[in-house]
Length: 355
Image (tube, rainbow, N blue to C red; front, side):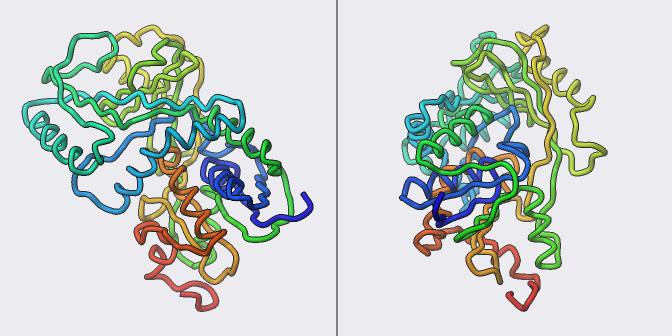
């Protein structure tokens, strides 16, 4: 590439998505990753794109809603450019309700969804039918929402790389020069770098583990039971995840995955006996705010941060990508205050007096 307008450091979901948004606007982009495409937490198995509950509304929930609503067209554009599948599907989601109080709360939330979800998706309460692909529900009632979707993380990243290369974007594994504006989308390592720069911890890694079973349910909704995601994918597998481990001894899969499998079978008995075809573990970047961290890197002109996807990186990616492209290419800062790097660090003191 003769010249570069923007260098993206990190080939996970945030890095590749920001690169794609910038490339579509005509910018000359280079993506570099020292380890590999999706080598961090983005290369997992689960791919649950699910909304926050429609109540106690705030900027984070509003941003996520916009991203989920735009995701179908956004991923369709990636697929068209790359001629590769992403595994995206707006399949919806089912959740069991434990008792009468939970049913009443879910019905109240359905009214919130009518007001907040712009008439483009529903959150409704319905009786269980006894179908095999329904979670066990003590009350006999379920929440069904039509906003939740799924993505295959590995297919999605491959489609993004294909779309970028179709736009003549260089995607390089290994060392390379940083040219032009630089977007740091480097996950856990990036949070550590930012923490060292400002002299205080702004985030850290949290280990997660997941597994995949051979079970054909590709056109059926994802399930959410007792904080466990059960997500059917287009390849005839069902992903089960995930753990959330702030403290761990090694970042490889371990015996905790057996507990996930036991819980999944108890919730959805039809999965009993399904073959385990993959096990995964990775360390996800969680900011202290538990929200994405976006914006200019204080005190480093021309450097930007896109980090902190944690468990919702794929769901947030379309909107994150467009907001970061606005900032990097046009100087237009539409980053919500709840996500702003400067806001996150407002109580700290950066090196060289930047804050």
